[in-house]
Image (cartoon, rainbow, N blue to C red):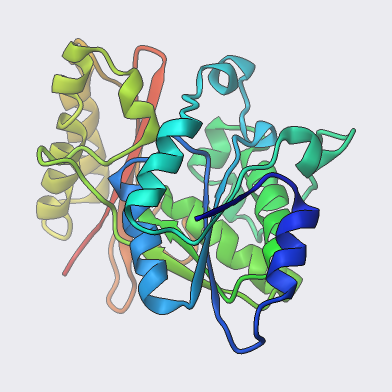
Length: 281
């Protein structure tokens, strides 16, 4: 496994590759878990070489406190990637990616950037778009892999590729869950023991919404979800929405031939957890 710390060195290496070799790319912010590894393993089956990036991107954090508390476990991350024979790891610092100007580029993603996460995390998707575009320019992958836990981010990246005519195929990968249903996240390690025991309730709520979707109204489902969280000692609901997968706009009822998801964001004290589930069959 080769490790690169600057764009010049990794670009020079990638330029030496035979033209018909495909490159798969898995961008991460580190603190890797088995969900990340599942993305890498899928990428390995579909490409000749796989590059994993580890970079905690400052411009996608709306709160400096959250950026400072984000777990950083580089040594452990590298050991995990070695266990699955990852080909290359790119670990740039902030200076390498932003030089002297740590600012996000502004994007028009057609309105999907203002839904759900966009309402609660100002500028978040400009930060995501900026850094993903930069990584694509450096690595020039044929395919890039993103987990569906961040489904809105996945749709944002697809839109980024479309509006900038970037020649990369974006692959969405299924949510990887703990045995008790909690979606794997780098933030999970910040949960206290009691919060961790309480956290699977998030997935239980999503499963319940899936059962009720199409049987009772969307408004009624949302009301039930809010009631279930109202008296929860460890989890505070930030939002719950049922939205169209393509537009990400909240809906009031379901129509045939459209795909829907339930989206949720929850706080366990200052740890923010998100999840989603596809509705219908």
